[in-house]
Image: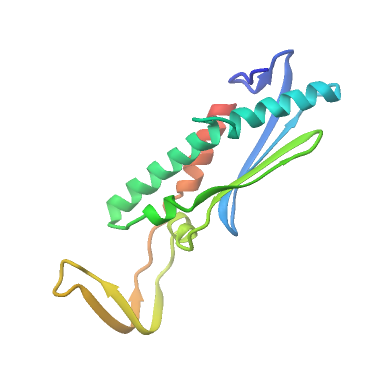
Length: 171
């Protein structure tokens, strides 16, 4: 059974999709349910088909949504001079939970910098004993400080970009 662009499946039974950005770890939760009353075998078949399209096989919708998020994050990183690859490499599907009437998916970025790039940070002080910073373009490239006043970083909303792409695809 195929999910049409308008969110319906064969037989005009409607699937309901609800997605949101979550924290701890930063990621996306997506709930899929059958909006209409349908016999249990039909409901289960529709949810199995939705699961296959979302996380089954190469080029699935979750993979494509992550690709969109990573594109937004890489663009942000290039614009501001941040190495974001460790964050992109930390993505994984955290859970796929199925029940007779619902499918719940969660995927996220496990790197500790992921939420800082997504939400941004305000001005803050970083203290260490000491802090080591690498700047290969300057001298030997390693500098030590006890304290650094950081101006903060702007938000990128890269996870939201992936979620918005997914919403457009499934609705």
